[in-house]
Length: 238
Image (cartoon, rainbow, N blue to C red):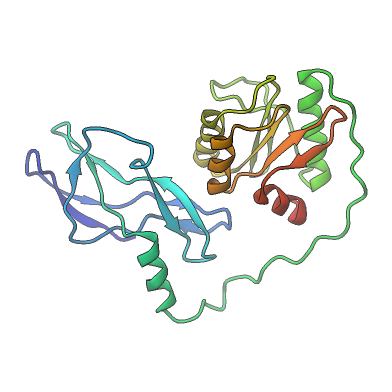
């Protein structure tokens, strides 16, 4: 793993920083490419844009948003570690030889599924049950509802998957999408969202950038994909 020397501008203490590693949806470990030789600066004011960076997976080429690398100095300063822009990282990738032969080929299309048979949704419990039936139809046969209720609501789990079902009569908010994604990141899982009332515009845009599948449940109990990650999930299945 690459590392860079970091000197705290507040106390002049020297550190060696290694970036965190995150799982790309393709399964490959991914970390932000550090910008060697760039000066660091203490974080005195936080904004959403500054707290996230675009990182390219060097295995599949996918771009995702990951937390901006930071280092906490013992003196109390929090330092933002510069990252090489994704455009420069793309250029470096194109200058390298072709992919190694051990990278697996793209997945082939799964066999046709029988038609999904929905059940009417009249209560929050039925909405969660309908989402669970749909995930099983997609091939997630070990779907279950967690017994414990964590502060970040997780309504369903399956192998490599966590799911939230929003049953309030208002569009799902940006914060709900971000919280589910961060919880999935901690669990090295993929997040999927179902909503009865749709999604706020910024929530949908954020989910698109994170590659999170979004579905809307209609009163008949049929989930409808509302973004391309959801279309992809339907196409590939579990």
